[in-house]
Image (cartoon, rainbow, N blue to C red; front, side, top):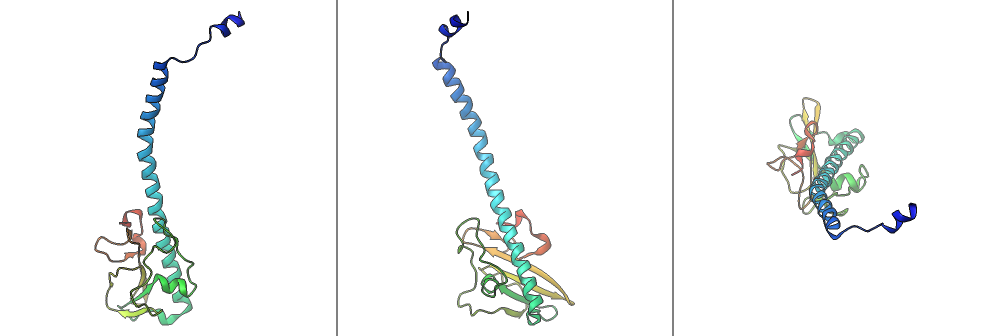
Length: 169
């Protein structure tokens, strides 16, 4: 009896194979866009994590050098390149590109911070902004590359408490 089953064994028909291929195609068409969204969200989360690391490095820098604290009501602008050059932060890897794709400092950067600024420069480079509000320091960050980055819709830096995925624009 077992031999009879083996002799009657047949492969799949062409229609059955086509049906399986169509079903797999439909599943792939549904899965690929959702995977693409997951990848983009993870890149946005990486941008936010990098921005938080910049703020943490700026806090360490201020702790190490009290001269970085701005006057009351003023800002200190600390470029990404300053944090990396002084060793407060290792080179930041951009999730959208290579290691050097974040815009790190203004044109003609001389290796120092801009202290006692009156407002957010809304500059086209990455920086941490430290604001002194009656001896309480508030930290803001802008981390950008050529495509997108962590910033407000008007191009200004994002306050530390507001760092979220939706701030990556």
